[in-house]
Length: 501
Image (tube, rainbow, N blue to C red):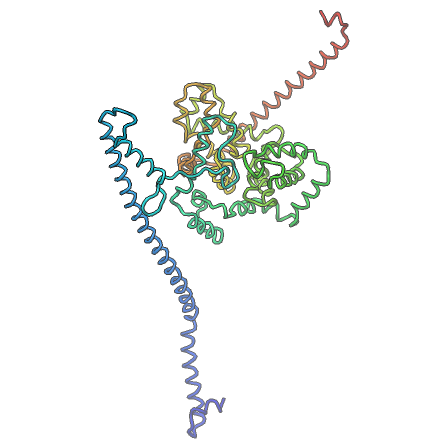
């Protein structure tokens, strides 16, 4: 210390040099104590500044792209406006010429020349910028999910609706996929977004939100199970006799015959579907297999791998739906149909009264909606939007969308004054609905308030009634069987002459 402290002081006063040193040291230390708390703040501001600079750069690029796109659209608009003026002038010339009588069909009139030019323009269908003008979209055989766009053996009216649906309508959406993708990415990483708003936006197929939802709802099962639980379960189901396997095999090709992934024995989805259903039947021996489970699993496999599709089926059957929904009695399904009729009478009283007037039982159609979550009832784009909301919020979504579908076409139903016409329209009206944004608005805005407590209370009320009815029906069935057996035994003891008499 002495040497260091006395080094800057070459005078003979060693003690004074040491004091001076420590005095400088104290001053430096005091200054350091004042600066030190701000070092983290400075570092934070540097990081923030770097981030903001990056944001500014990205926003600048986006702004330039938007400006370039706007200029391009302005050019296209001017070109289209000029094209419209040209076409209008040609039609005016044509109409003017048509005022004069035509003496001979073989005579070359100015009208014929104008018509030829109009036909030629229509076939060329391009503007001066090279963009297509009113060019129809080609209808592909399958959509992006593998569903056939136009059915082969259907009513002509339904086939026409399917052709309209097959047009590339999503391309008309003004909302770009990338921006919504960023929203989903931010939500899944920060968990601080409004999930309902994101679900109401277009969900790009590349984002595996389904997997996240399934994992969230089944974590209470999976945490207590081995990591290879699905593979172990599948191995057991394959090796041991399974009473459900025969019915599963019969239903594999009936599952989604209009989807290329399940349309033939060699299709890529058939074996996956078989595995998921076998594993599920072994996990749930009380259910085994119920018609409807195959469709649920098939839709899940269009988004998820086998194991996640298996857990998706678990989520639907064991977490979301009430008990006995997929058992032989379909008790839970019957109860939900009665709950839905109550809601229909409250939310859409005019339509409910209209159905009652013409003795139309809507459950003949809606029963399948609830059992398989609208599979084969709505177009594929709308189906996956419904499933997005369902996997996030649960079974209340089925009631919302079932009511929204009827609300969407309520006026069309009210115009029909015949029970057969109403029932025919019931069979296919859902596939005529293409505007999913309007349907979302009806489901989540027009149908409010929509408390879950109300549905649960109504389920409890109707459950007791249905159980009582089933008990009475079983008693009647047993009485009938006893009487039939008694009559059969008596008949066996009769002579031929007595039987003839």
